[in-house]
Image (cartoon, rainbow, N blue to C red; front, side):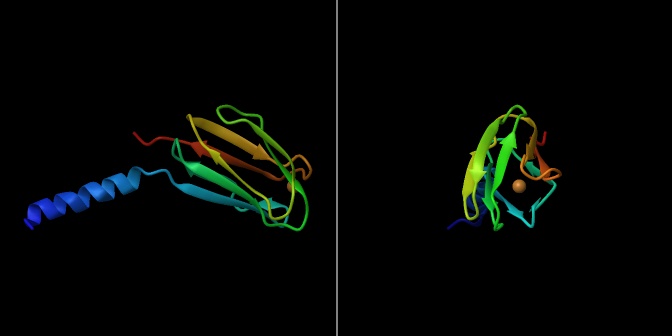
Length: 108
Ligand SMILES: [Cu+2]
């Protein structure tokens, strides 16, 4: 195979791999989120997991992504596609101070 064609094929595969939606996993453990801040690209998926031995909940009252998962028990997980651009503030209303923010941000 022609070397130039091979290189172009590899490059285009890398580019398409790079733009594919990514999954970001955020756990709830020891009454904390695993990170205070998560930066994602529009279309990426955030999966929340309760890795604690206590019940939490998972609430966002902020645009562009609003949700309210009550009774989020140990072992449960939820995946949410991050459409739009903005800052999503996530909290557990059972445990004050259990907060984190997701920045949905597209690099120009
Ligand atoms: Cu909690």
